Image: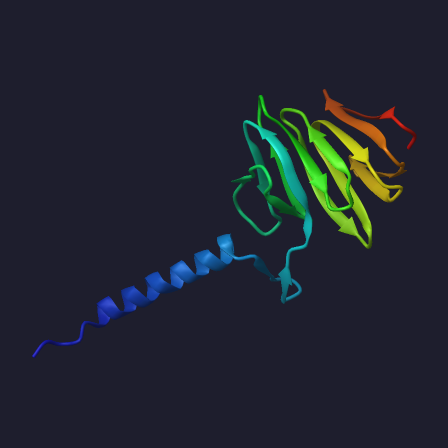
Length: 170
């Protein structure tokens, strides 16, 4: 009679546990917040309207950047980045649009009912469709914007940031 192999049993349990932990960490839509110890479902911020070359996102609770494709959803607290020679157009849930030029990095957050776009690098065009407030954060400084059918350009070159209204009134 053959003896039961405990080593094989423990190795199998460890492998199954690692697979489950990887799934929860990298692929699950429900996120466990270790500080508050609450399970949170991510809230949709918008969709990708178009992409040329590569668009990447990194959620606050993820370790790696993942690619975004046309019509894919991104969520609040995600960082979104266009690589070199890439650009994209993002449609926000409030109807606004963000056009991102190459090597642009932004983070989209929500405070109460107001979108907060943290601009970190590159050139981005923010088009506001409704007369709803938006907050743009550049180098820790917050700018509150409101304008219907208005376009604002955000740039950061050589550590100099600028915010300019190029269409409508904001």
